[in-house]
Image (cartoon, rainbow, N blue to C red; front, side):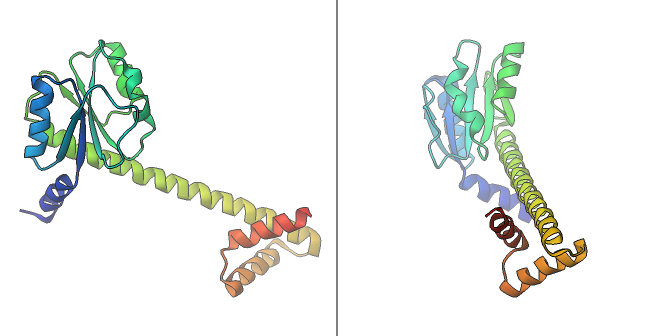
Length: 195
């Protein structure tokens, strides 16, 4: 086995799956199969009003007969891998899949082949999306910091009659001397100039 193979299996052993499916043959078989491939699996029906804290993967039945509003909480869960279980490919189902941000799909009748791939792929997709969201948040914070620095430079230029480079150098030197991020120095200067 390659290290990445072992990593995938270790990930499965730590994976808590929640199966939102009626208590029928498909639901029971799917839950047993998830346990057999190494996941901690629990089946619940009807869907809970909120996601239990330890769940990493949700497999949920999505059909025209079921009320998709019972899954509303799922669209706001960012780090949870979501796998839809569908019987039909109607326009309504496709809209619901998009609304609930499904990472993978299993079709009914459920077959064991493909469940492992759907679970591992969904975990990887959810993890990738979470990393991208963190990067976006970091970029937004960096952009806000740069705007504050630009504002602070403008305040220093105006109040001291110095060039943009000199104002930036003053901020940078204070930041390095006090070991405080330049964005915080800039914010303090902006707040103090508003007084």
